Amino acid sequence: MAKITVQNTNITIINMDGEDYVSITDLARHKSDDPTAVIGNWMRNRNTIEFLGIWESLYNPDFKPLEFEGFRREAGLNAFTLSPKKWIETTNAIGLISKSGRYGGTYAHKDIAFKFASWISVEFELYIVKEFQRLKVNFRNYE
Image 1 (tube, one colour):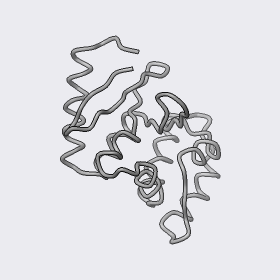
Image 2 (image 1 turned 180 degrees about the vertical axis):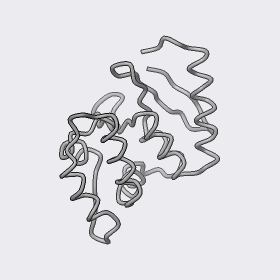
Image 3 (image 1 turned 90 degrees about the vertical axis):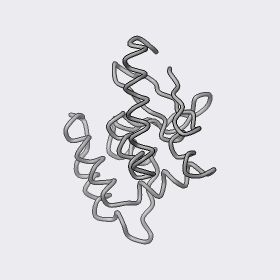
């Protein structure tokens, strides 16, 4: 586990199976004191669902495309809601991780986390990418 600080926001990064996952719960705290609501609003967006589905199709051979299509049809409608946990369980997604307990929250593969950061603020995204790259150069082997 590693941490970076971007615009006074502490952000946790974990490594799972050789891939970096960024806490989007921490990223959402940059925007609001209610990170769950921020993530929920992001996941209601049709562009978000399409991005997540395409990412999973590219990198996850066990992804369930039929379940994804159901979410894509509903995305953007007033009554549509989707939690990270429901997305993960329904589509067999690997790009998001939902953890409870210590170090809990929602983590996203770095590709997805950077997309989420750009939804929050383009400036915030650029600072995150810069700090993430600095971390990778300075600390090649972290947990």
